[in-house]
Length: 413
Image (cartoon, rainbow, N blue to C red):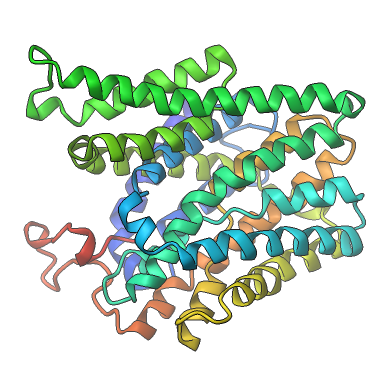
């Protein structure tokens, strides 16, 4: 209950400061991260959790499922077909370059073996637009730039997952049974994809029966019911829940745009709550001991991951595109490590691989540094695109006048 109370206090403070956060380098995501650090054993000692605590795994699992489910709903196939080239470059060239570049840095600078180094690269390859919300949620920012960052971050979580699982199997104590492990991973991914496609199609077909259908006030709960059932089925059948969540969100949007529209406000709010809870728990794991365990080479690798690997890989992938110099630099900078990397990092730690602790320490510090760096720079960079009203809150603070449309802008996450 202490953790619940701490989360409630952190949520209240974040809401009260969200207007200020939207106009400054402060961010609500950063507040939850710092809140977790302050209440951990390393400082106030209000909550006592370790990376192998069940609450850590459950919170991260639910958060990533919720985030991927809502991310999937943002995949508009007609728009994606019409504007696929730039995201395809980022995913098909930029992501592999970042993956390989991080593996090289980890091996030669940190000194981990090749398998573990590539595993670190795979875990840190996904990006998360929540820490660049002043950029991706503003109409003043060119649409092609917003689309690039949104589509890239929405899809790269799922692309990285099979690679992470395969490398964990290759690096783990059961690596000699790699063929059986790969078959198991393939089965879990295939089953997750199948459930993510079949379940929303089945439910949306039920709605079309004459005697069935949801009244307006209950319509937002239909996709929520699909998500809850899917989450339970995945854990009962050992199907991969993350691939299932993303595919279910995308299929539901394609099969029933009206269900997506009804669920979107509720879904975004639930995803935000899940993200904040995961950040609070993750922050509680960032103890002084963890930072002390990272070698000097590890800190060098963290800096290079943020200021060199991601920017260089994306700039290379955007050569020959119609982005101007400013847009390329902004896209290159905003490759923050987010919730997928947190969950994948915990998978690495809990897998019991020989160098899992060292890999997790590097991953955790890199994620923390990325959250601080990217969530504190999106507002200043947004102003380069003449984004002035970053909150949508009028000067007289009359809450009744707040415009909540996406094109009018969101409060920073």
